[in-house]
Amino acid sequence: MTNENGAAKYPQPMAFPVMVFWTGLFGGIFWGTVGFITYYLNFTEIRPNVILIPWALGNWKYGWAGTVIAILLLGIISIGVAFIYSVLLKRFNGLWFGIGYGVILFFVVFMLLNPLLPDIKPLIDLNRNTIITSVCLYIIYGMFIGYSISYEYRNKIEQEKEEAS
Image (tube, rainbow, N blue to C red; front, side, top):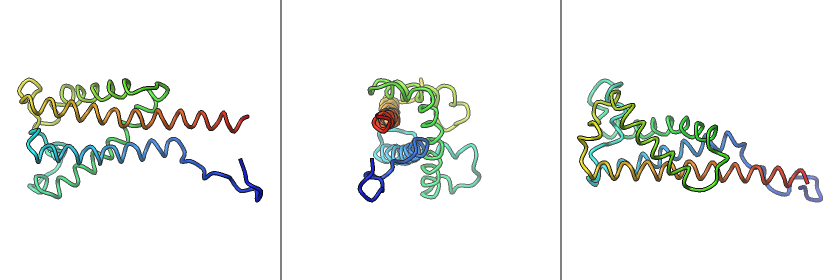
């Protein structure tokens, strides 16, 4: 659609892969920050810094610099998580696929990746508050990633249909 000057009537939306990138980055940083807040308020015994413990030397990783870098690293990892969702599940509507994706991510981190993260106790040794808080955070994160990507994918398809007609 164009106006009388030949210019586009509406601004062009972001390319889909760019939107997936920003959704992943924002989701990781935002929900990583929420994870830190839950740690700070003693809802969980796991802080975002656990991702740095096996890889970084020095005590800086336990302070604020470690927290900020860990949250930024979670944002970068989340970009990959968002692209995986985009490839596998973007066509599916509804919140249930995002919820399921969040539950799968929880089990991947707490069961499969647990040996790589020595500061996270085995799942059966974690207290109930940590498990409930972590499951809820992963579910909400999965819903955020899943719904955002699926919604934008459906919008893109509708816009392409509209432009074709």
